[in-house]
Image 1 (cartoon, rainbow, N blue to C red):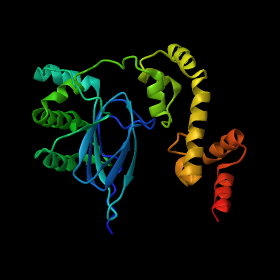
Image 2: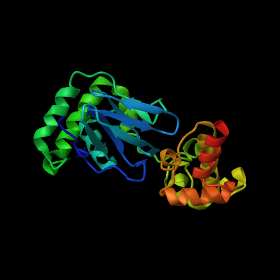
Image 3: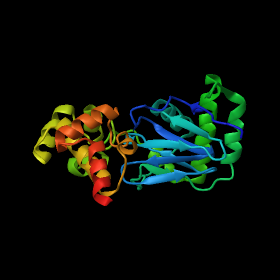
Image 4: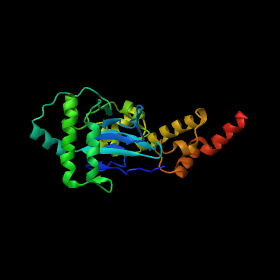
Length: 267
């Protein structure tokens, strides 16, 4: 089978390895499947599907080849570019009402041709800088003509507002991001975040995150029959050895020992 994997054909800045969306990002799947998790649910983008991942949010994704092929396109709209575009085109804005992290893009007859038009400009997976702004401007015009309400999303330059810390953390504890990032996303300084966090959870952020992730891990292994190797990364642990160490320290047996004990009981 032909392996047509394209390693991140970017238009704009590269995607953050921190699972944090720094800029509004247009995501288009040409071939294969991309699964995106935003803390609330999983969305699968198949061939020909697209969405906008909005900035200042958390998203984790994985990619699946179909018939040995995977090709996807990311186009990044940074604030500097958007302000230039808004000034040039005198774009009006209204309030964008959706709170979704992954914003649906309606069927658009121009998008497949636009995606095809990018290929001549690729150079080792990234578009030539000389054409990047031209192609981003073209895409933004296509999106705004089809969905004018997106102007309220793209041209909102505000920072995250102060939100409910308990609700946010219980929804996003699986993301492996820094405490500073969590503070920013809840609309707080680091010191205010730590103070409010302690008042809410009676614990420090780091200790609470480890305990909450371990509780979820124990539930998934004990009740859902998940293997430790299947879950540790998804729960925000960077190494299986560290996950096993803190798990045993918390529960008195390692994830593997819990799995083996369940197997014996079920025989």
